[in-house]
Image (cartoon, rainbow, N blue to C red; front, side):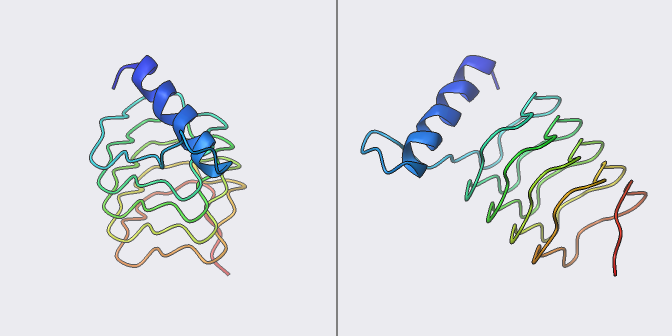
Length: 122
């Protein structure tokens, strides 16, 4: 996805979160976001179902309540990402970097966690 299009979606999503009538919830279902720079992005309650986020930089991103069902997050940088209550069912997190990520209430059922870096399950 072109950066300009992604920037527009993120701006519209921010407006939606702020109850601006011109805003629109981010719908990135199935989007090719591989290697995208989403560092610090606000994707609270965004739809990323089936998105290709391989190698994406999501460091410090707000992904609370986001739908990441069946997303491909292989090699993604999720360091310091806020994933509280996100839905990651069936997602592929192989070799993803999750150190310091907040995983409170995250749904990881059937997710591939092979060789995840920094994941601490209590």
